[in-house]
Length: 203
Image 1: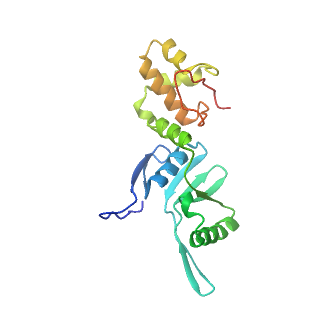
Image 2: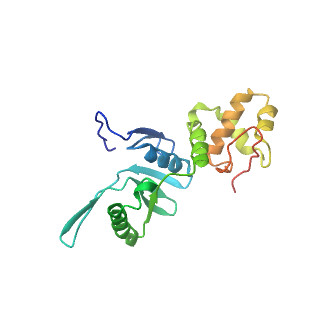
Image 3: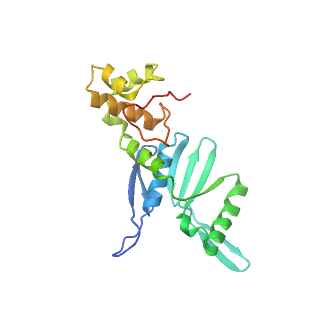
């Protein structure tokens, strides 16, 4: 795992995020990178998340170019190389050239390349909320099995919580939210999750 530098007065916020995909910590260098990590961790197609996975280096017209992508995601459809840049920086010529060069180096290998900027705020808040329920060992295993085995398609979240009286309402609610994080239930990120949320089982 790469080690990121910290110094007095730095403008970005580095840290580590505990990923349910990796069952361990993944480092990030900014709050925007943390947001991308949350979305990658929430995506059930992502199997591996690596921060600053490799160095791209090549001489182009006598100039040595170097680039370290922010993330590598291994998915069921192949590798995805990700650079994270604020939307406000994308129009800068030097940034656009650097990203275009990285794309030209990555995509001929058959890998996808993604430049990721700020997500819609509601989507980010939904994923951030569900991420609080990502640690499976915190939930009653028997309850999770029962919830997975029942046909709850079309049921309302509050109704499920009140029906399963063998467990406290807040325990059932937390378990359902965990299954939403895991992808057992489909999540509409365009709308905040509330008591009236209708559960839909992923197909």
